[in-house]
Image (cartoon, rainbow, N blue to C red):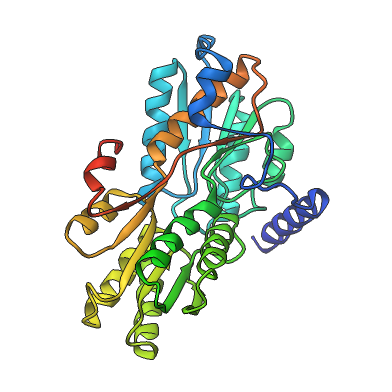
Length: 332
């Protein structure tokens, strides 16, 4: 197992070094919004009979990925293909995820929808897929060698929360960021967008920015410690909803509910429920179900020979208590 692990790491690192990641969906010029697909490229072509698509997901323990999978299955039914969507047992089994992808390549799936656990762990699989399988990177880590990317503009995610805080607290305050997994593209970009936008008011000070690895318990412990150090903390911005819900528990334990705002990311059902109860302040809903449907549509179009832009950007929106009803209709 040690040899296998070392081989995997070296292969991933060498592949990563070879491509020297310069690709960023957030700044890519070859990009359109998913809402423009039909207007620019016409109706979705009919898929050939018996087409099978593989979905390599991060993990199904997080509701976001469950919703994305539901979107895949809905898209498969809508467009006349079948989708085999699988995931490792947790979001840190990078070798297991690569093995899963290699198995799908061996089955001859015409397209693979991959959501890497890191920016490098599936690069060997993408290289192996070659011309036998079309590879589409679907949120949220970025594999720069994938032919296409379907997902959100991560930088804008953080911007939307920062803009709300700028408007709500013009006199300033103390803010903390709970980051996702260190080094992952989505976590980096969400945090960068938030910090860059918030810097427009120097009175809003970021007193801490700490990774909690997408984990609810880690986020709870981190937030609890921060609230002891900064008892008058104005707000938390969290890179996903799972962590945000852990932060909410810490805020409640500190007697700060309604005083310290908590924002998450993803738009999972549990986040919506918490917002309606007046606990979580808001979430940047990235509409994972819709993203899954769009990814299948993009695969069908590409397999039919359409020449699409490299990036297909899917929508997102800041959802709070006064807008829950407006966006809840888009849930699966």
